[in-house]
Amino acid sequence: MLNVFADFVQARDFFKGILPDERVFFLVRHAERDHIKPTDADYGAHVGLTERGRAQALSLGQCIPADGDMVFYSSPVGRCVETAQFIAKGRGLENAHVEPLEDLGNFFVQDYDEFTKVLRAGFYEGICEWLLNEREGKPRKEIEAFCPLASRSEEMLAMMLEKGSERFNIFATHDAWSVPCLAHFCGMTFTPQRWMNFLSGMAVVTDESGKRVRRIVPVTGLETGWLEF
Image 1 (spheres, rainbow, N blue to C red):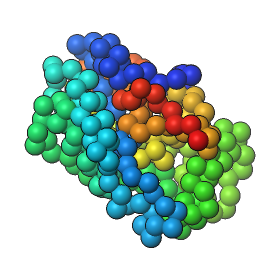
Image 2: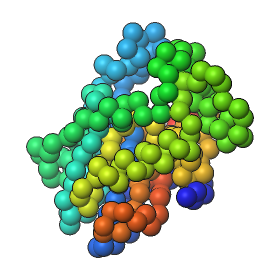
Image 3: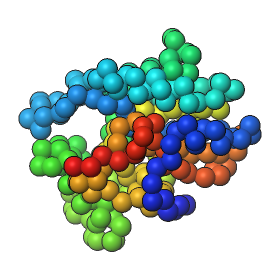
Image 4: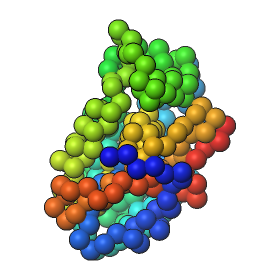
């Protein structure tokens, strides 16, 4: 199901193009957060959104058409829950329920101890090396921090389609799990110097049954979907 994209589509333009008989399942990275230090004991699990991040999420919510119900899922990490809450507020849903999903916190992790080593050694470098090895079909290590990319990405898609029950379905997560899906489904390439931006991700558009995928599109709620380092 590979669709090759060179860039992200602006959320305001993407949602304008949604047809009345279509549904959207949006796997989106949380909005802007404060800086995470590699020495943090919980690797930033306690780090929340900035004021600008909350405003970003509100703005994204305002892009979503008013015609159609919404449901919100999130990584249990606070900044992801908060992102979903502020998207809901931007849509005019002040007290929307956000359901935490453990899968949105660690979906591609195969061995947590090995994954922790990757976080400490170099987060961007470790994920990019994994994606490159998967793309080139290199043999997997006996102990691997990450799950196989293709099969696990397809499982992510299946989970979203199963969980999402409304016309607009928001899945707020982390870049670590949005990037693999964008690489697998959209053919996008990431490097430690060119990474995905906050409030960006993968939008899956289906027919009104929610079972037949029509297209998968990289979408950003900001002016650009890229961070340059």
